[in-house]
Image (tube, rainbow, N blue to C red; front, side):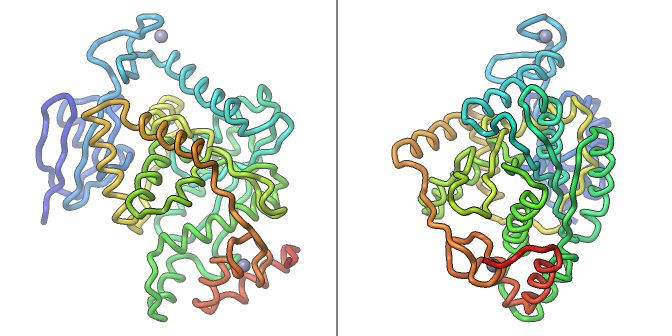
Length: 387
Ligand SMILES: [Zn+2]
Ligand SMILES: [Zn+2]
C-alpha cells in the first residue's frame, strides 16, 4: 500500500506514515502539540480526526510563533502571520473585528435584515453562524441557520446531529431541507441513477447546482433578506485562479462579497462575510472557540483541477507569505476596472426559479435523471408557485 507523506513545516520534519492512522495520533507521536499546528491534507484543512489514506500529503502549518509573545500584551501567541503575533484573546478580537469590518465596508448586511446562514457542517460556516449570532444585537440583525442534507451515506448523518446541538446551544432558529424530500432521493442514489443512465457528470456538479437551488429557496422560506455563506479568502482566490485557467472572465466578475439583489424577485442576495479572512484564520478561530465539528470528509472527491489550484496557491503562499492577499487585491482591481458582471436573469420555464437560461440547471439535471416530477410535487406541496 502506498504510504502517506507528512511534513511539519518550519521544523524540518518530513517522512512517510502508514495509511489508516489518525492524524492527531501521528502528530502526538512526533512530540508535537496539536494546538500549535493547522493540519492540511492534500491542500485542504482537516481536523485531527482525519484518517490518513494511501498517497495523502499531510502538511502541518505552525500557528504559534517560536516563543514570541503577543504584539499587544506579551502573552503567549497562538497566531503568527506576516510578522504579527497575537495571543488567544487578541486574536479573537482581531478576527471578529476583521469580519465586522468586512460586513460594514462592503455593506454586506444592513441593520434590520434577517440573515440565513448556509451551514455546511464544516468549520467555516459554523464559525460564521457563531460570529453573526454573537454580534446580532450590535449588527441589529436576525439569524437563521440553514442546512441542506444531501443524503451522502456516512458523511451527513453526524453533522446533522452536531448542527442541531449547536443551534440549540446558541439558541438559533434552524431549518433542514433534505434532497430526499425534494428530489425523492439522496445524492448517493442520484449518482447511481446518473450512472445507470450513462450521464457523464461528477457528483459535485449535481451537488453544487442542487445545493444553490435549495439554499435560495430555504432562505426565502425562512423569510431571510440575505443568504450568508462561509466562503473564505482562500475559496475565493482558488475560484479566481481556476477561472483564469479556464478563461472564464464572466465568472471572475461575479466574485463579489455581495451579489446584487435586484436581479430577480425570487433571488436572495448572497453575502460572504469571510471574504477577507484566510482559511488558516477561520480554522484557528473555530479551534479557539471550540467549534471544530467532528469532521468527516465528503466521500466524493473534489474536482481535480480545483485541488491542483489549491495546492499551488498554498505553496506560493508558503514561499511568499502575503500572496493570497495580493491575489484577492488583483481580483478587486479587476472588478473595479471592468465593473461587476451584469447577469440577465429570467425565470425558469418549468419551475419559475431564477436562471440565466430558459430552463434552470436543476430542472435540466432532474429531467435527464427522470426526477423532475418529484421536484414539482414538492414545490406545490410546500406552496411554491411557478412563475
Ligand atoms: Zn495579547
Ligand atoms: Zn427550474
